[in-house]
Amino acid sequence: MNPLINSRAMGPARFPRGSYTVSATGGIVISTLPHTFPREQMEAIGKVILSALASAREMGTPFTELAADFAGLEIRARDLAGGAIIFVTPQEY
Amino acid sequence: MPVKAQAWSPLEVAVPGSAECGPAPVSEKGDGDTGLRACPRKILILDDDQEFLDTYSRILSRLPSHPDVRVASCATRALALLETEPFSLLITDLRMPKIDGFQVLLSARRRFPSLKTVAITGLGDQQYRARAYASGIDLYTEKPTTATEIRLFSECVDALLAQGVQDGGFRGIQSKSLMDLIQIECLSQNSTVLHITRGSLEGRVWVDRGDVIDAQIQDLRGEAAFKQIFAWKTGNFEILPGEPHHPRAIYSSYESLLLDCAQSLDESAADAGSGDGTPEAPGISRTLQPLAGVRGVESLLLVSGPGKCESWGVENPQELAGWTHRVLREFQTLGETLNAGPLRSVEGVGLVRGVVLLSQNGTDLMAGMNRKLTARLIRIAGRELATYLGKE
Image 1 (cartoon, one colour):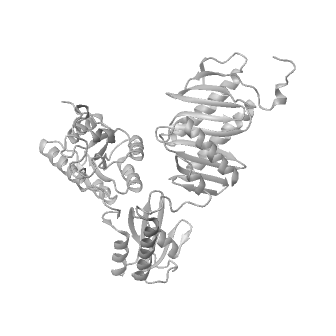
Image 2: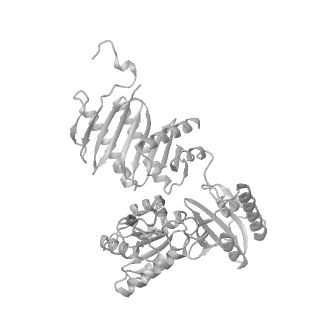
Image 3: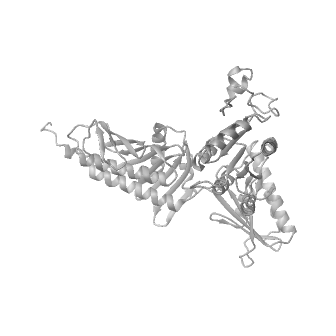
């Protein structure tokens, strides 16, 4: 990490690029994200994605793909029979 | 020889001699003008019994009109197909898990008034029959079991296909024009309420002892509402009991009212040149109008505060508003947890439809998108919607 850069002062956090899969129960199965990316954050993302996919199914409009566009991060997920594969991509400033 | 249901493109129609195409998918009537204009008659069969689907898709594909037969084993799939492809005829089983045939028929009748419908069931129940006919079906039949029954059923289906699509008409148990309906009620000196639907739009016309006394569509009342309903060329109707104490808002006689509406329609048709001339969504609010113009948008829900909800093309606005709110708040909370910056949009791509969710300055927006849009096009549409939302 470059000691001259204060990441907090730059606004949204910097995110790595990678993907991981979560099971239908929210457990992380496999990941290409670096170990520096906290597992808790991966689980938090997985929980919200699975919840959104499940509620959409209940509404009768199941999604095959779901994306959330934040200023500093894009999360894109594909439904995998109740679980999901989740792609994490930092936004380019 | 197995017969496979197949989708036909206009290009295939243009080259009927192609061995790949099999039987010409164009009806024998009506393709003489251009060879390209006529579409194959399309049948959708809905049943949770796969064996039935396989058998009848084979049988009906061999009808003299060579229809294109598609099948669906669940109601959701059937409704998705109906939304995306033009069908001439829907044949549905009535008893199915989750969403039954009656619900599908009602939904299909609301959304596709010109679609012919056949209810088919293994039960010979009179209540089922009455309920099915009350929902405005064209034919109710028990599942054929003998060769003769199959032949008769096939002939009925072919006859329904041959009827083609009528030029408008309001269908309840019968098919009538709105002009006919109102004249019948007024000449009979009836007191009724005509409940008329077209897609997600809903209108009412109050008739009291042979006089049209009021009409309503969304926030509009009186003559303005009557004229708007009258401009619909297709839809469904049901005749409800009269409401003798309903306040009067229309004072013209029904004859002058109908004449006035007919003249207005003629003038607007002349102004528009040719074509249908009916606005696709006459009930849409001014706020939602620019949003509805964004490419691919098929329905909208705007929630600007508790109880402040506007919608267009949405069947269950309250339920959808709750879902939109929950999903947006969950993602916003996630964004705060991750320090990912403000949430710009949530987008879903689905087999039934796509969705864009936006939240700006306390206003939540849900846009239902055409299911054929890719994730990238949904993202582009979402950004355009966000621009409009920011202007509100």
